[in-house]
Amino acid sequence: MTADVSTRDFAPPAAPLARWRKRALMIGAAAGILSIIGVFVSPDEFLRAYLMGFMVCLGLTLGSVAWLMTGHLTGGNWWMIGRRIFEAAAKTLPLVTVMFLPIAFGMHRLYLWTHADVVAADKVLQDKQFYLNTPTWILRAVIYFVLWNLIVFLLARWSARQDVDDSPSVWRFMKVVSGPGLVLYGFSVNFAATDWVMSLDPHWFSTMYGLIFIAQHGLSTMALTICLVVLLAHFPPLSEVVRPDRLQDLGKLALALTMVWAYFSFSQWLIIWEGNLPEEIAWYLARINHGWQIPALMLAFLQFGLPFLLLLSRNLKRNARQLASVAVLLLAMRFVDVYWLVAPNPMPGPQHTQLYLHWTYIVVPLALVGFWFAFFAWNIGRRPLLVRHEPQLARLWESSHAH
Image 1 (cartoon, rainbow, N blue to C red):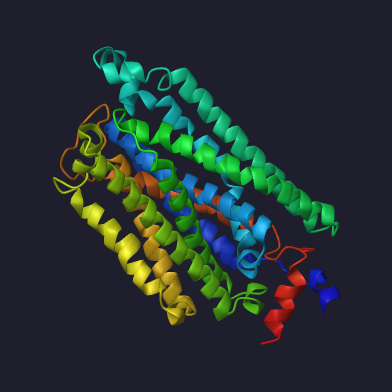
Image 2 (tube, rainbow, N blue to C red; image 1 turned 30 degrees about the vertical axis):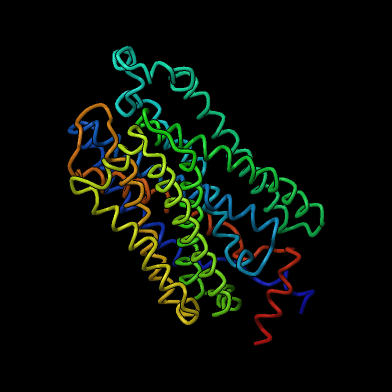
């Protein structure tokens, strides 16, 4: 059996993927038309909504890159099952790179520190001008995207070779790329989160902020992976290798990332509360008053409390339908999380001290996610769902058929 594994047909289910792609494109197109209206009717609100949607798509893409590199370094059945999902999501990075352009062109409507008159009247912004200025902000963004695209290009190219080449040098190369790649991912996401989201309120700063985004990336990507594994498990070849214990492995990872996100978020709050510094406390006061406490409580109970309690159950993690339901909840809360981080900030244009949900905050992220998922579905349909000539493939296959 070991010798025959790599010769089996691991082709993805074409018809379901085509339906998913078509529906995602329809949703993206419909929401995109409404989004274009928002550009002319409410350009400031449109750009805020666009930033929210972009950060959701970026998180799903970079989170997949991080899980992919982690799997190359550690291996495991969970990674073998989810690898093609991670790769397909990672290869949406060129689309996400293009998605960033409206933010770059519209940064004057998003960031207070791009306004010379505001900077001239604010000593704090003057002190930060060496970092928060348009040329270096754009230069850093170029560096981030070049770095991320290079990592994805190398991993994708050598993964394609692995389908036809059983040489150990192929998977060893991907391990060599993944080690420093994970380190560079951590640093670059930290700086990108600072540049694109934290600088919306240029007076505020937190050393935990980037770590929270890294945890968000891992959690939302694992939630998406769980949903897709459950759906694809109805079709070969995943129908032959996805078992309750392997769903449980994915559930354990989701539980771990739920706790990591909560730990980072609570640590940030605790440090600021303990320091009792007015310029830091103001960021939280803006998010726990005037109605903004509603999404804050939703995050506490629906992104941590309820998923944490549910994912503690061994039986739930082994039940495909129930585990997928928790994963859908986590994906929905990802938007609430980004909304709570972005919307209350003091940005140019209309200010919202009270809880505020503009219609563009829904349709614009929906358009971006729709197009992102359509490209993702196209990517995953182009490659076998299990990687040929992967050293762990025979063990995965044999253990699946031994039960």
